[in-house]
Length: 65
Figure (cartoon, rainbow, N blue to C red):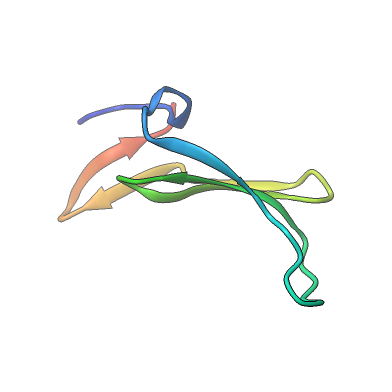
């Protein structure tokens, strides 16, 4: 198994969430990996969601330690 922390991935960018045409949301920012997609959501209140593992074709290809 390839074990990684998303902080060590080379393809991660942080995207700041912005209000669009009056559409309100609780998101503050997103972390995106070209290989794994969304790996973290940060909410305005400080809560967040992080990807813990990614399984592709039955094999764990990402696991956050």
